[in-house]
Image (cartoon, rainbow, N blue to C red; front, side, top):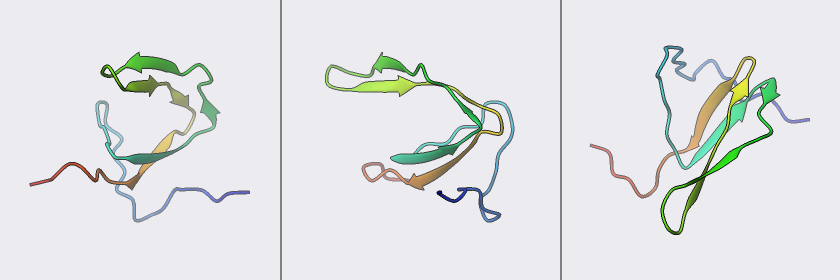
Length: 70
């Protein structure tokens, strides 16, 4: 069985509207959504949208490799 991704060193934001971005995002929850929707991103790309419930927690596992930060 895998271990939890929750760590004390993670900075956790709990305000409505907070967001995270990254190339890889790990999500842990007690109740995943099983009807993810496919959304058109561009002519070549699709995105997926869904909801996780019950103690949802997410961590950026890999930051963007093609975006420069200031």
